Length: 282
Image (tube, rainbow, N blue to C red; front, top):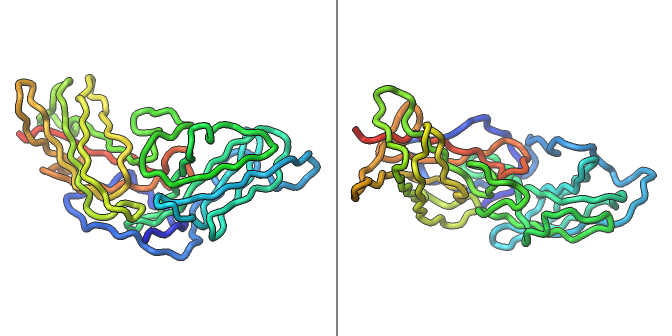
């Protein structure tokens, strides 16, 4: 069972290897050394002489609808913020808010495959991401493995709750056999164990078109897990050929891919993009 906790961050940009055992979500004890609260604004206390109006309340649940204890909830605007955590029933209550407009953001601390993640949580409707007045509001949160983050703008690998793969056409070596701009690449992702929430993963089929000028290509919004990844090029005249892929220093017929935590409480997903290098098998 996946445990929600804080942990020591790993400063690693990507993890791609030729093989790997399927991970099991690990139990934890809570606590940890993650950077909470996240930076920004001025912390409020609910005290002071400002006129106080209402509170924000809600619950935080995982992908199975179970309460998440210890989730981090921030009520904020451009000038101040109030941080609270959820109780054993997944419920939180903010302090009384000074007059103004606010929005709510939340994160869950999750340990998976020996790594600690601070995952941005979603809300039931897109309007929940909007600002509300200091009279208070109800804002519920839910753990989402995939989907658009409504208050973020998709830009390459960002703007989604899921992880992202970043593909490079060759390693830069003059000996690389690269694909041509306009080539279509099909990517096959086969899960090697449970996903980050403990659920069973599904085989994913994605594709992209090789861009001009050696620009990067992305496959986005992938549920965090460990995957065996293969890729093939669709031939312009029909048929296909398998590609080599892997890390900068080593490419093979397949690669085992892990999505690493970003290491902070981010307004993005909390997941680093993972890089893969592709080349023709020649």
